[in-house]
Amino acid sequence: MSAPEPNAGLLDEFSDALWLEDGLSRNTLESYRSDLKKFAEWLEKQSRSDGALLNATHTDLLEFLAYKVSTRVKASTTSRELSSLKRFYRFLLRQGKIQTDPSLNIDTPKLPRNLPKSLTEVEVEALLAIPDVERPLGLRDRAMLEVLYASGLRVSELVALKVAQVSSNMGVVRIMGKGNKERLAPLGEEALDWISRYTREARPALLGGKISDALFVTARGAAMTRQAFWHLIKRHARCAGIDKPLSPHTLRHAFATHLLNHGADLRVVQLLLGHADISTTQIYTHVARERLKQLHARHHPRG
Image (tube, rainbow, N blue to C red):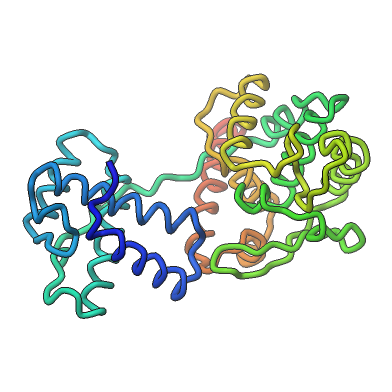
C-alpha cells in the first residue's frame, strides 16, 4: 500500500531538504521515505489522523512503537524508524507546518553496540581464491573482491566505479563517498594487477561490443548492482566454507580490522574508510582488540 496522497508532497519536500542539507545518498533518502510510509500505512489501518503524517499525535507515535515491539521487530529497526520520525517532525516544526513536535520526549532505545562481523586473513584468502578466473565473470568477481579488500570501499562505491576513476600510474582510485566527499583510496599492486587483467581479458568479452563507462559490468554489459554483488559474495563465501554471518560490508570490515591488527594508525584508517567522525572508525579497534585477546588466550602459556 502506498502512503496516502496528502503525504506524498511532504515526503518529497523532506527528501529534498535532506539532500540539500546533508547530501544524503539516494539509498539513504529511500530508507527515510520507506520508514515514514510504514508509519502512514499503520495510521491509515488504525483509522488514525486519516493516515496523514501531518496530523499524527504523540500517542499515535507511542502506539506505533508499541505495535512494533509486540510484533518482535528488531530493536535496531525500531530505533532507526523512530530516528526517521523524529527528523521528519523536526523538519515539519521548522517549516511551521505543525505547532508541536509529536516525537518529543520519546527516547530512542539504547542498543548494544554490535561489533562489525569480520573475516580472518585466512578466510579472506580462501574467499578471494574461489572465483574461476579462467572465465570472464569469475575474473570480474576476483577483481571486485580484490579491490574491495585492498581499498575498504563501500559496496555502493565499488559498483558505481567508472573506468576513469582508476589511476594505474598513481595506484589509487578516486571515490565520491557519502555526503559527496571525495577521497583517494590506494589499491596496492595485487588489486591493480587484477584490475588490469580484468579490463584486458574479461571486460571486453562481457561488453560484447557495447560502450559503457562502468568499470565492473554484468554478462549483459550493464553496470553491476549492489544487490547482485551481495548475492555473489554470499555464494563465493559458501563455496569457501565460510559459515559466519556476512554483510555486504564484510570485506570493508576486514580491511579496517586487518590494518589495525598490523599496526596502522586509527586516523589513517579513518581517512581510508572515508569516515567523517573518528568515533565511527574506533569500533574497529574493539574488533582488533578482541582478536588479539583470542590470540593471547590461545598461545600464551598463562592465557
